[in-house]
Image (cartoon, rainbow, N blue to C red; front, side, top):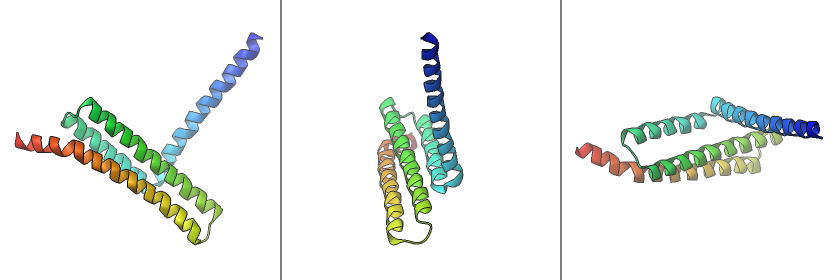
Length: 132
């Protein structure tokens, strides 16, 4: 009985490990093939550097980290939607275009929200830094 339980645990653990492996592969693929994903990661890196230089608070770090996850997650959903639409509808179609445009618009809204929050966090810190 214990041997069977160990096998079940090993299988579940292996499936879980594979899930993480496939998810990471998806992120890497998106980063390699999608220009916008590279832009999001670059901006995230800039925000991290500025956050350390301007000594943002713990709450401000949490806000930035949440926005990083939201925007990059949104970009991954957008990429998945666009890829799926391209597979299902390889030729021009107004509805396929609408689906792709709408998913891109969703990422734009998320990025605007993130940028606005970033400006609210960083502008006072930059002004304070300049005044010193």
